[in-house]
Amino acid sequence: MSTSLPVALQLWSVREDTARDFAATVGAVAAMGYAGVETAGFGNTDARGAQAALAAAGLQVAGMHTGIGPLRTDLNRCVDEALLLGARHVICPYWPREHYHSGAACTRIGEELGAIGATFRAHGIQFALHNHAYELAIVDGRRVFDWILDAAAPRDLGCQADVYWVQMGGKNPAEFIREQGRRIRTLHLKDAKELGAGPVDFAAVFAAAEAIGTLEWYVVEVEQYSYAPLESVRRSLAQLRQWGRGV
Image 1 (cartoon, rainbow, N blue to C red):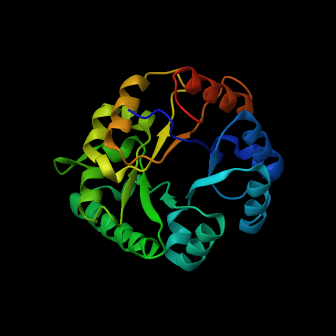
Image 2 (image 1 turned 30 degrees about the vertical axis):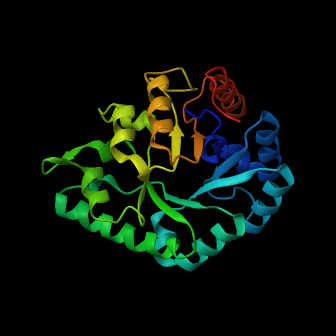
Image 3 (image 1 turned 180 degrees about the horizontal axis):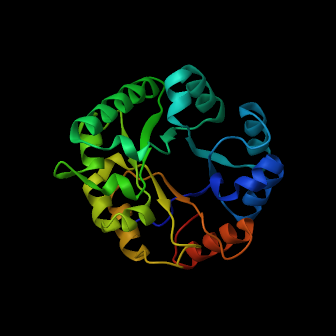
């Protein structure tokens, strides 16, 4: 099994740093050895400024997190930004959990996301939904994510699995990865704090992720910290390399 997948950092992990100085932050991320980033907005700049800073740092754009608001109201701009940054993946990072109140409601969400994904697909971009724990909840006898994903063609709606939130949702992350298979092109590696500092069985995650054969990026995200955010993401990359992952 391949262990040479590139590793990106989800920039939400260092959002206070990017808000102060996006260019300096991505320069520091590149110096750590990350191959790319996944954007979560552009901090103190705009899409063009971010593109210039990332190019100067030598970082690829593994994907873009883009909220459902702009996806609904200005989809063409979202496409333009993805093309500008060379992002092959755009991910909706969040859907209001109170909308997951029935199978029918979840199905309608999947239909809407699939229609958005069809537009991205026309431009060579894969669209996906990122999970939290509540997408693993049972509604009308099935998991929320199953209702949503079954309502859209895999070519129009992928799944960005977040292994920590899958675990917190009561599902085995490796099993979830095998079930979703080719819908997963970018995988969020997250733990309670830095990688290895929580309940996730990463050996099983790597075995499942690398077996599906379509994964393009590992994406590190840290949301709870034992150190300053930049130090936490540096330590997480170092841990990943100790496990033999990352290029």
